Image (cartoon, rainbow, N blue to C red; front, side, top):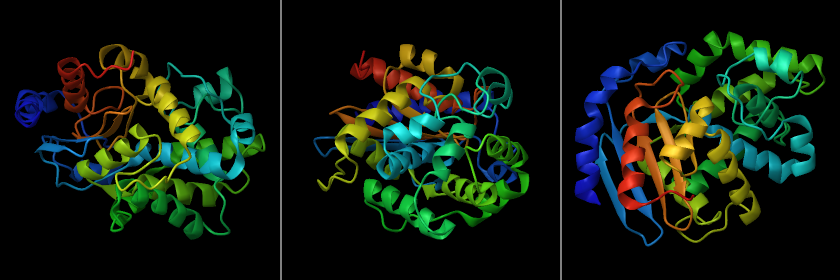
Length: 303
């Protein structure tokens, strides 16, 4: 596995030239577009790593998995899915058109930006900081890393340029789905700016692969919710490339526009990938290709 991962990184590192950094969040353009790393952590306790794995990057949309878990724990499935749907969308993750025309006032699913805003608004806590600490707490427990924090520069960069997300928030307020838009946006921008490494993502993916138990054996996520969010990762986790990813790779995964991908192979392994050069759908260009080859080589598809 170790030598194969090293070969994967070498094979696909040049593919990063085909991708593009997420320039609509200015701070993300400071990333090295040629960086590429992968960590695999198995249920048997084996760890394999190759490439630029020590680099810190932000969760971005990977945080949507975490907030969905917390909202479901706080509100229950009926309340959450009364406000956000369960269906994949063929549109971009930041589409306003779908929210206004196809499904007025109710986002298609929790993995697109409008749905994630609704989900974040449902997390319990009397202040933004209290709600954020609960998100950070779950991330730290899954990753078994108490040092995980917010990248303040990325948070401020998102807050300054988050016009589309702000528009979505106020559109949802018109339908009575979100009440306090500004506090929801503050929480959303901060959750997206949580800073991790490939190893952190691999541990988080492993926690989901073990049905909510982290590597230390602590049940940090209720088992039914771990299964539910993995289903969303399969159907909606790779933006509007989720169907293609399911066919070519076939494992639950969630990407973020920083270039991170958290993947979870049930009962087998967690995988963390980082490659900040993105394809046209917003997924790591080289990272997706590494996961495709890894899945084929090790027969990882759940289908």
